[in-house]
Image 1 (tube, one colour):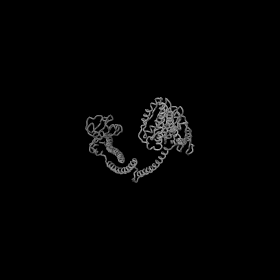
Image 2 (cartoon, helix red, strand yellow):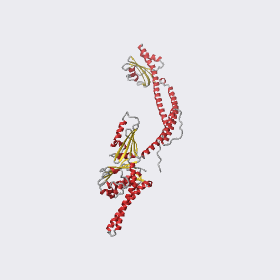
Image 3 (spheres, helix red, strand yellow):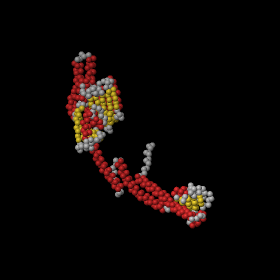
Image 4 (cartoon, one colour):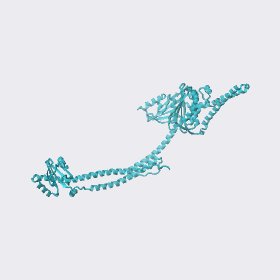
Length: 589
């Protein structure tokens, strides 16, 4: 039984979070204000009662200053004031109670009483506490007059509680304001929430690549205007993006299928765009292997372009126009026309054109017919000569006859190989869509070829190094991929010499292509021949090649196999330095 996907937690909407966030801040403010106001009202009520009692303290002082009988004076004072149960205490500077009308006989030092300490410090002080002498709760008010404390206290009864009662009208007013704020805020956030919900719906449709056909209606306010402008701008931007994307795709396709190597760079030399021919041409021009297009200007032959760029990119007096710089390079039998265009924003492009290719193709077509006739004529003539010898000399010994018959068989086998290779090339030229495609692991394919060639390699003490980062795999034709690598191995084994090293390296990979190099460090090929080795039936050393037994079509099959897989192949070599083949193979054709 399949498990249901975990339920996503419900997300609180932005408008609701906005409402409760603002409302919580408002409530926090109201709460702080109420606490502050409540404390303020409470202190105001206490201050009001303290003023009354402070006045009593000063009246007592003036009366006692005019009388010698403390008790009688105080009793008369308590009769005159409304609070007849008032407690009066007089305290000396050392804290001793001189007089107290509470009836308590033994009183301890009063300097530690709260209101007394305040009066000693500030001349006035009050507190609400339980008496340590009587055990009753009082509101005390003390005044420091000439270092004597005159203290009056009222029992904390209904009268005092009523005096200290706080006016709660401000609480009701703030509750009313809170309710009003709740209503106004809810309407405001609801309006914002509707606008945001519509924008979210629009964004979700955009994210799913569904341009909504509905017309969104927003409130007639600033947020609605902004939302409508966002949608309008997106629609305009999307239309422009589609047009630019279409043009860009056309441009990229043009560059990818162009017969020129092309690359575009930022002002600081970072690649923006390139095709696979560009890096192939760079490796043919450079004496060192080039893995990245950014390494182009490090090649010695391209130093004039580097000087041109440095002179103009950093030149404040440069003319505001596109500047070209052409360079022609003759390298290893090939002629390359390189052109640099420096644009107004200091980005630049490099294009490499092999201007020797057209002449090469024309020459190859012209020689193809006579080469086929010549290559077919050689084994046929040999077979015919051997057979004529046998027929014309019936007295030949059986040993001689067998020798000539074996030579006939050898030449017929060579003729069969030749016809087979011609057939493969014809299929590639005329019926390439008939080849079956499958997924081929290049590493396993090369391992199979190495096993098949191990005997010949051991005989010539040839070793190999296979470098295939990422374990490349191609969706292509197995037999053609096999022919590419097998013919390259056979060619190296046959012609590179003894004790050499064969290196197969997948030195680069992009989203569409694998970049391979196949090299040996053998005897190499003279530059005058390197441009023609992919021609059908072309031989560098014709006598030696026929003696070894090749058909002269191996590298031509390699080139056509690479072309079938949407790639390009080039070779570079010089005598004594071995041969290196650079070729690309598309990952999926």
